[in-house]
Length: 326
Image (cartoon, rainbow, N blue to C red; front, side, top):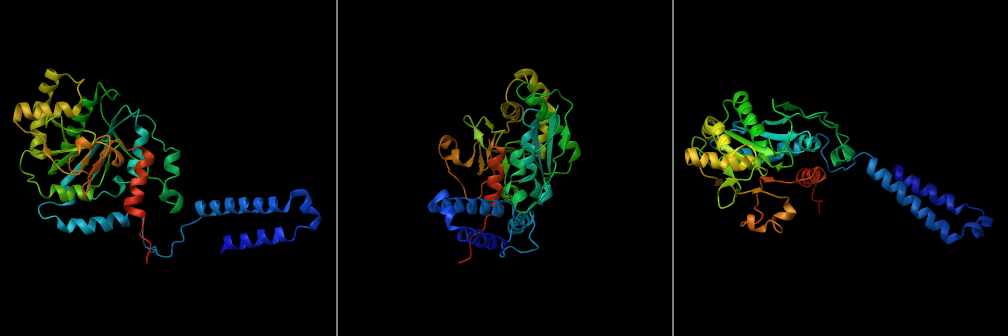
């Protein structure tokens, strides 16, 4: 209503310009200027104004979509509950800007606990992409500040990622000793937790399982896309991981060491769990097509190398975008 009044008022102003003014500014130029001003005013009002969608339930909240999805899928669970799983995320001082999008998208609505760990992580502050996220601008939701649990290790990504991940696993096992499943993923991974829970429900949590996206002729599961260990597999890995580090060194990729250690000492091989992607969705069928022979499955679990702005885009398309009523 306010926008309509502004448009009408601007039209009246142009109509009432004195005739002597037209030769100076030009009638065509005046109308063009008006259109430009109106477009600018409309864009400002629509961008910063409140969300007045009458089709949105007044009781709807940012987590309501999460609850809807969880309520739709969780009744299908037969052998486990949502809190049988815990997810650990690795961040670092060099990538800590990723944890704000993570906290304010899939982590914030996960029905299973998600914990962020990092070594030598400094100040955690939101960036421009966080303040311009759709829920913040259109729903006026405050940004949630993520909590990063410090790991007693020097900062760094390449030479200490193995030690960081093992410290993460040890912390998870102590803090969550009764979980059936333990997942590790990177801070640029978008995870659909309800889909993950339904997938895990089809596996035997009592077995020694190492689930994820196998790579390099089934030698390991991608650490970026995220892999899941059953509790027994996790305990066995930690019992021998120090020996594995001595033999391979901590300079190898953490996912390579985990795959080698489980296979060498316990004959536990990677088990493919459909829905884990080592790239963003647009690259899964192009640059990394050979790594995803099944293509894009109906119930995707994770996408890796997701930039902060893309993480918000995934979340918008998954939980906020609506189909217009016919």
